Structure formats: structure tokens, C-alpha cells
Image: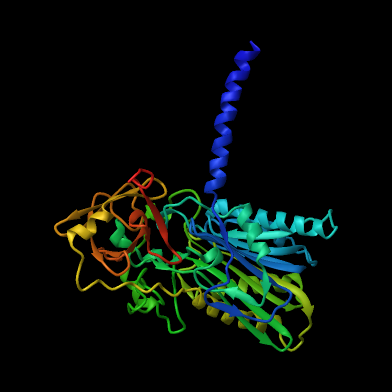
Length: 465
């Protein structure tokens, strides 16, 4: 009898161990490099760190205050995704918290905030404070769904990696940290099919900083909004996903042109697919009532920079925090709010990232013989398949499965050769496909190399040549 029980358990154990080992091998790797454009500022009481998973791509941004902060929160939109925000609604006049965490991954990404808390627990324990309880608040954006195939999301590991990378006076801009795969302006896309999303534009995280006497004011935001980013002249800043040179209209003109949004888009159930999450930070001493009013005032002002803002399909959150370090009788709370509101607009504008340069087509396209090595099936995360074949003297591609915003299933796309194993997908968005050549053998491809890269592996890569 016992043998009959033990044998199935042993078989189960033998299947679980290799499975977990394989998961460890395939686990995403945190990236914490300091490359790219960034904001430099003087606020020693706050340290900033970012960590990203290229396998998403997605990421996390942490703001760490070793001396703690007092905070308030303003919740807007239809479905804010947050952690511990309620603790900042109770009017406490003391520094309860040590970190603010912004993350991609929708509700799954909230675990990055837990990772930061666990990282702080380990840090304090190493200092001998084993009774320390970390105060961490956080918010997330929805960066899954149509824009990417992978289900990799920020987690405890990524949160800890972001915390370990913190440094003072530095905040990376654009497609970094929690803003790695942020997008904005999907309100103005209508209809189904990949070509209808060519105007859905990349966004990111932005920051701006100002000093008024002894008072320091910083605003840091991740823009993943239903609405579009608008400049100070009322013009939409970006209106093409892969095209930064396209002239954009005034937002007033755009709003007149587009009809009402459809009910199915506005109510799909689950988390809201858009969000702008923001941190306003100062060192000026403020009572909770003025700190809460600062949160409301600045958040309201952001409706100038993002239009529309705080819709039912957004989950907007703004944290306002102070380190309570300095007095400044010359700067009233109202004036502080006015200045912070201007800083917030600058922060939103700085979130719009630089786009990767698009390759040019070769004047002499390769012949069929040279193109044969690219033929095959390439498997994306989620098991979508892109089949590339040689047809009529060139390459043709067809996608099977959910093509997201890039492909319509069953549609044939022409591929135009560029330099360096790179091809242009002849669609409205003109996605870029770069084939991975390992010693003359094509092992996969990368779509849109750069911060928003999506990788697919060759279905034949595991077979002997």
C-alpha cells in the first residue's frame, strides 16, 4: 500500500524538479544600466533607481528616501492600481514611508513594490535593525496587452534590483524604468486591425526640477495615458508610433475630428488599460492639509499636458511627499502648487522618448538565393508565428495568431531589405525585423530593435543543420 502511494509521489517530484530548474534558466534578467538621456538635479534626501526586463520589455522605478517622508495621495481615473495608498489618506503628520515604487506589469507589477520593501528589510537587518518595517507605496501602469507579446512582468526580484541601483541626483528619461513600454494617445485610435494603431505613440517616464530659495520641487511621472501629450502651444507632441517627424495637429482640432469612443473600448472589464502615475516631491515643511491640496492642485493641472486625462479607462494616481526639511515663509502653499504644476507640465513633456532611427531600403535588393536563409517560421512569446517565405523575387511574411498592434493574422506582408540582416515590414507602421545570424545560421529575429524590441525564435533553431 505504501509503495503504491510513494511511487506516484516520487514521479511527481521528478517532474517538478526539472521544471523548476528550467524556470530558473529561463528567468528574466534585471537590467540596471545608466545609459540614455537623464535629468540631473540636487535633492540628496531622495535616491532613484531603475531596473528593467528586456524580456518584457518592462520595468520598475524606485524613489528611496533614507530619512523617510510624509505623504498624501490623489486618486483619479477609473481603476487606479496601487499599494498602501490608503495609508497616505489618514492625515498623519509624521514620516511614515521610505519609498515610492512605480512599475509596469499592471496589477502583477505591484509585487515590485513588495520586492523593494523586502530589500529594505534586508538592508536594515544588515545594519542591525531587525525590527524595522518598511513603508512603501506604489502604483502601476498597464504595459501588457496589445503592445507586446510577452507576459514577463516586474516582480520581487526586479524591485530589489531597482533598489540596489539607487543613486542621488539622477532620473532617466523616456523609455526607462516603469516607462519602458509606456504609450500614449490610444483614445484617438478607432477600429480594429494593425494599421489602425499606427498613430498610437510611445511614451515613457519624465521628470523636471526647480529650486525656489531653499525649497526644492521635483515632479516625476510615467505617462501611459488614454489621452495625448500636449505642448504649451496646445499641439500634440507625438502622433505616430515609429515616426517622430510627422507634423501633429492642435489638440483642439484633433478632439473635434474624432467621434465618441466606442462602449466596448471604454468598458472591457479588468484593470484599466491606461494610467499616468506621478510623484511630486519637495523639502518644504507642509502640514498634511497643504500637502493634500498640493496633490490635488498639481494633479488637476496635468489636464493641460495630457488630453483627455483621468477618464474611466485611466487609473491615474499622484503622490505628493515632503521630507519636511526647510521652512520658506516667502513661498506660500498656493504658490508652491502653481510652480509645481508648471514643473509637472515639463515632466510630462520630457516623458516623450527619442525614437530609434528607421533604416533605409537598399537600392539593390538581394536575389532569391541570398534570401532563402531567412525563410522559416519564427515563434513569438504567446506562440504567435511569423512565417517568412521567398515569393516573387523577394521575402513575404504572414502571421498566425494574435498579431497585436503589429500584424493582421493571415495577411501577407512584403519585406524590403535594408543593411545588416534588417528588413522593413511594408505596413503603415513599417516595423523593422532584424534577423539573428549565428555563424551563417538564422536563429531568430528581433522586431523593432531598441527599447521596444520583441524577440522571436526560429522554429528550426533546435534542429540539426
